[in-house]
Image (cartoon, rainbow, N blue to C red; front, side, top):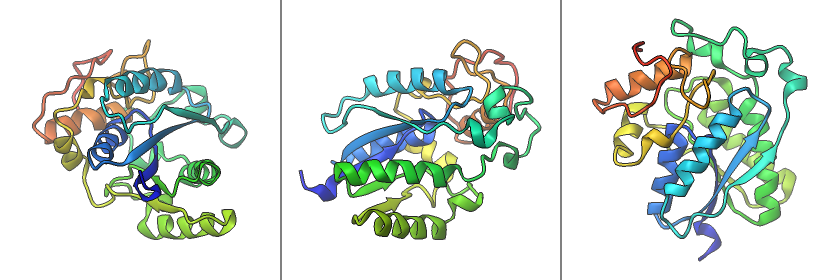
Length: 224
């Protein structure tokens, strides 16, 4: 397989990166899934479901999961993502889940891995609706240029879902085992809490896409 067909994909275990993974594999690309551990409260549950989803994928061009360490407790300190207290709930605004500079950290770490392994493309599953400053088309273009120069490597940063909404992405992946994906800020024994900002967003996405929601919520009666 040519190097141009190889790509590293930042995976979280959520809907967007899981569906994007499948699409890249269907295109015949050799995909190296990368998960970055930063010390957030949801990571144990997230990794549990990510590994289960990856086991369900039947493509030979899927490489083993790579876990990189990038502790951020010194940056976010008493932030809810580290403490688990005051997690953004059902009525919270999307900007309340923003982790400043998160994509800068993720790209910096994983681009070094890509350069060392001679993987020419780093892919993120960012959507059209992501309005944070480190998720704009210009940011990804300039960040890709910066890491290529800094690492003396021909590395591209790609965001193929950047023009898609979550509804469009869900419809694209409607035949996948989406019950094995995970997107919750306050998991209850590896289950979705059903109450946090991300659970509400997840419920709404399935509803808007007119698809049955297969998620096992700890509090299933709450609608987004």
